[in-house]
Length: 382
Image 1 (cartoon, rainbow, N blue to C red):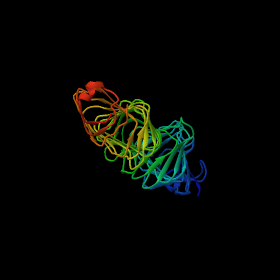
Image 2 (image 1 turned 60 degrees about the vertical axis):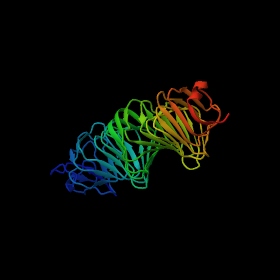
Image 3 (image 1 turned 90 degrees about the horizontal axis):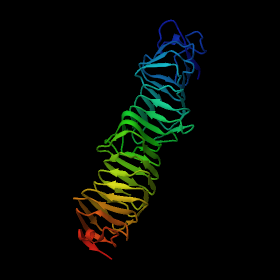
Image 4 (image 1 turned 90 degrees about the vertical axis):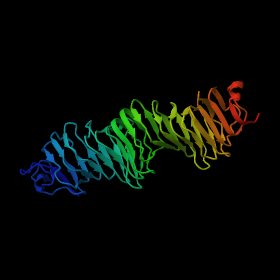
């Protein structure tokens, strides 16, 4: 392990030239091209540099005081900390890959290219980080942690975010999706646990694999979010404040409490629960593409499940239900399939001009009056 300073070797400006490296700042060149065990420094005396060949590596990469240009013609792999300089210039399109535990300090400098943070590691943001390129987090069967020293140290992704394979991405840093890009999960088992904000721009949620969100807070503060064909899976305790988003399909799963500070709008199938695990949903849900109650446990919570348009509600006979249901589907057909037993006062009809059919049994109907009952089909128990 050694310190390697980029210096003017008098031959060229390439990273891969031995004569451009010294063990001291401003020293004579000729030490060695950095290895993965070396700390690499670009300081006030370092000239322009071109990352000219592949497999450029460093233990840490520190640009403190650097005012010249590094041209990223190739990727640099860092297995520790990265420090950028506000006055440095970054050109070229080469990425940076971080595959070891360390800190990231941006000093207000936007990284213009792709960033990959990969492996069972922790990257701690010591200030706010902005990447103008695609951000890729995690790797196969690993937990990749992105932490922040304080809540202001957010991680802004301006060209999209990819969660790789079946990675578990977690940490205290809030991730901001800002600009034009795609949120992609590379497998059906990957998880994102960091707080997430659709900040602005147009963000597309990929339909390739489900968007699996776990134990975090998701917000939409100003983005246009395109979810065509995409499925959101919410696991355990989550909080959603996502106005102006219509999800193509949503699965709420796990023994948890979901908190909705704005209504959750589902255009496709809403699937509730898994196995015998019941859960609580506090807040309003609007469903128009069908509701399937999978859990055999209890579903409870404040707020209302609002049924809009033509759709079918299927509920297992053993599941217990105490969350309110409101039917408002003028001209549509709401079909209750299976043994749909709902408790007294839990269901009301605000518009029964459509057809409501019931293939199961009902407890005492809690709203809608006589005109509502006349439009029903099935057996009612009073």
